[in-house]
Length: 99
View 1 (spheres, rainbow, N blue to C red):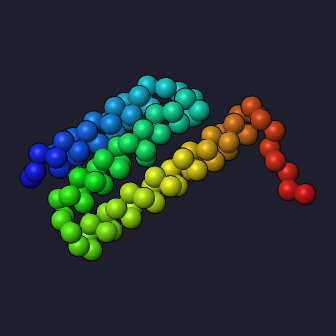
View 2 (view 1 turned 180 degrees about the horizontal axis):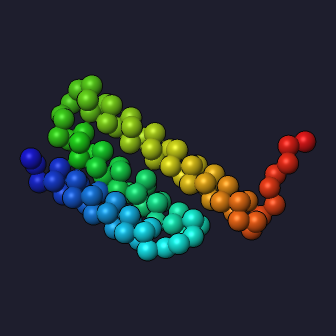
């Protein structure tokens, strides 16, 4: 394995593990969401880039980079939707009523 690949992989793994430990320490869903953001915006892209470098040029690299792109694109949207649903469930904000 190349040094860059290993560095990206271990940096991504460390980000994911530390985010998981932080999320486990908290009780409320809103607080846990703060620890999910680094996983989807930092940890997963670092791991995906390490896999892409390890696979070399080709279809596998394109698939890895596409998955990283989709995760980076949809991660914040899913976190915002989850936070809104949790706030509605806990009564912190009014639920939207379809009209």
